Length: 148
Image 1 (cartoon, rainbow, N blue to C red):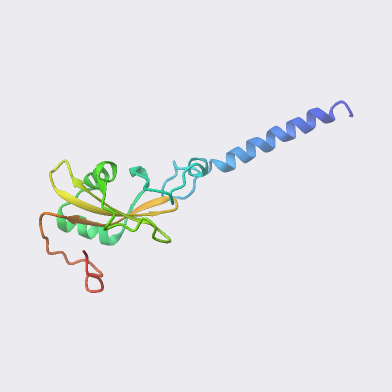
Image 2: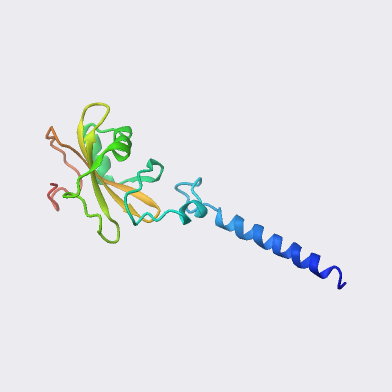
């Protein structure tokens, strides 16, 4: 039995290591089953804008603005990837979620400002603005805020 003890201890350590590894790569949430804890462990999304479109979540307000202003999800993703941050319209030190206003021209030639809120494991699309053309939109909450 004394000779088998080191082998049993080694086997137990290997099993424990496999269990820990499996726990670290279980899905973070049901919204994105491909994203795992191990992927997010190395990403500090609270320090700067994460431009990966795979983590986008659209608010109801953003969806309404997109429909009203004829802005597609692919245009939003394009601006996220290629737009320039307008720091005057952003709150990069905002808590709990910093916001970034990105501006640029979409492939469809719309001059857009898209506001993103960067929160923990996701990036929310807050609103979408066409900078060259005024659209009359009637979205929920319009009476409570004035969009700039």
